[in-house]
Image (cartoon, rainbow, N blue to C red; front, side, top):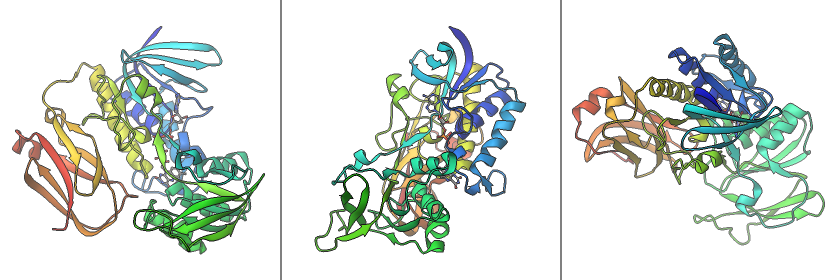
Length: 418
Ligand SMILES: Cc1cc2nc3c(=O)[nH]c(=O)nc-3n(C[C@H](O)[C@H](O)[C@H](O)COP(=O)(O)OP(=O)(O)OC[C@H]3O[C@@H](n4cnc5c(N)ncnc54)[C@H](O)[C@@H]3O)c2cc1C
């Protein structure tokens, strides 16, 4: 068994940023474990541009953005093991991993969970109809097209207007496919506004809002899908059925944080995000186990992943340097339209100048206010032209405010008309 100060599970943008920040804080004994053959995570297959606008003020492709961090990891001489899959972590911070050399056992002072997320497959949404070839997740199609060089089909329908679905609509069009429609159950797209414009509108790809697929046609290979309008309860409306012939159906119906390892280690998970419940230091209920990036909550912008994960790296470094958990926690939650907040707990003694609360709303709000309450006192009111579930929001809570309301037991974020 080898002793390591900080073990980072996952070498995507979250793990890379966390490792660099921990090293900058003076921790030498760090190890990144990555199951793929290269660092960079999901960014390796995202060859479109649009990454890093906030961090580098440039429009980079996914691999370019990743390589900036990989270069830094190499410059910092941070060790990593590739082709190494973590099989188990325990609450005593023992890590078991496997690679071609066999089983590896490590004892960590701190662990940073940075395993990313995976796509919800078709089974998770129960579409009736045949189980023919030609149905795959949008992310799997992205890997086929961008990395393996295969085209999964020519006549395409996409179910779900999340970012991966939108980006794949444009990508398949570039590669010569006819993308017939993007079908979305909700009355709004669940992806970023800019992706709706740049990936659908610019290519005249129809976005069928408040629609779903009610049947799948085809025996060996997909031949078509039957779509239908849905009512306000998301139930198909009789008489609105329409057959769209296609040979490929791409599913972009949500992402799920990859938390099997965390569950086995008894990390408490949020039923809303599927990620760990964390405090201001991004530390889970298990002392010394931190989480960041898509394994914590699904992000739309990698810049936020990098910011959040640098913070996790710094906090894990302070923990290793003996800054253990102590003091009282203020509960943080969302209400009136706010689905969740990260973090769920704040210990004001651990906040230096300010702490960031990230959150998502559950529906579209126009010309509304984001308000911040310390117990029953409203302390902040920010007007927003539009708030949408596809865009993550954030609010900064300053140390000054925390000191002013030092007896506060609960912080709540709400959406209000005024
Ligand atoms: C299709 C798509 C398009 C996107 N477009 C944009 C965009 O235009 N602009 C933008 O800013 N953002 C975009 N994003 C978002 C951004 O890419 C992600 O938010 C970011 O990659 C998440 O980083 P992560 O490190 O948390 O997860 P990941 O990148 O998924 O990395 C997680 C890593 O953990 C590894 N891992 C998992 N489990 C284990 C294990 N048990 N053992 C060892 N290793 C493990 C995985 O192999 C992986 O390398 C896009 C995302 C996708 C999927």
